[in-house]
Length: 132
Image 1 (cartoon, one colour):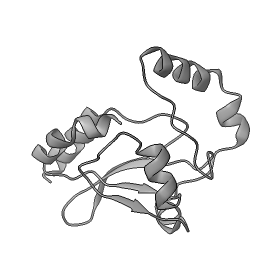
Image 2 (spheres, one colour):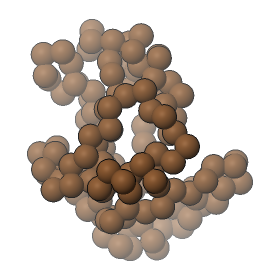
Image 3 (cartoon, helix red, strand yellow):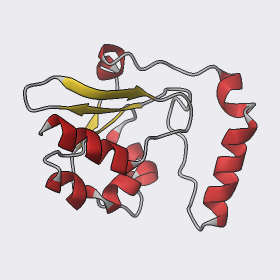
Image 4 (cartoon, helix red, strand yellow):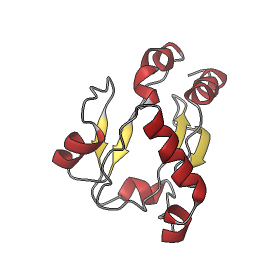
């Protein structure tokens, strides 16, 4: 998780990272967070109410499993020494990245299309631009 590596830079930009997951806490600790000690909150939303509010959709199976780019990304991660973490109870649930200013206004919003995330630097810039 690149955000873990850059948590201090995000704080310097005046923001705090927050992860929202939809699996039960034991599974999140055993799979997603195995070997990672995040320095920010990880919230569990098993009913996916936050996902609904933020408009985060589920992908179609073919969007994920039949996309050659997804397989290339996983191959590149494995070659670089990354470990593929286990899928949760719904591997098709897409996430998103948001920057919210101190007054609660969303100043950056990017629902996930597949296994794509904006660069952490992009989120830092959005936070600085918002004057967070």
